[in-house]
Length: 148
Image 1 (cartoon, rainbow, N blue to C red):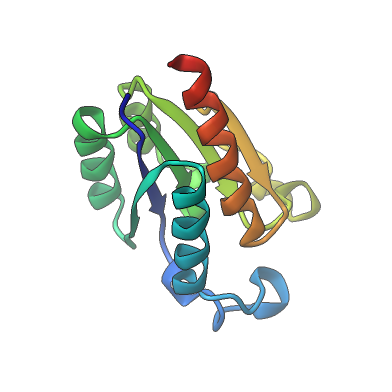
Image 2: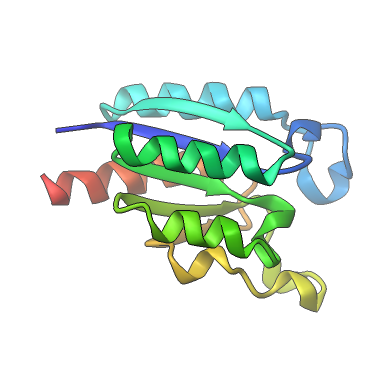
């Protein structure tokens, strides 16, 4: 069974650890990637970890995943709230989809509350910082095991 998972990260997440650490924490995306890859190896998954500030690049990655990945873990960042084309790409993907957010969106301004990606995600982890990515990997492994 395919155990390959794409972990996709949206705009500005390359600035983690520098940008608004009082909101997003001090952990960098590189550190999160290392933690994700370590946990994935423990649960028998391989990871393709990517970040882009460009919606089209993320859409292309989702299209690529249609042929090569059993699941997608995605933190769409600012694209969460308005990127219908990202939603459409995810709807065309038949694998497991888990949405991740570093912060608890419900505790933030109203415009953070509605996620378009949630309309197609199989599950969501939010408000746990970088730990949320690790938990998403564990959830992905469980979902894929049930599909086997």
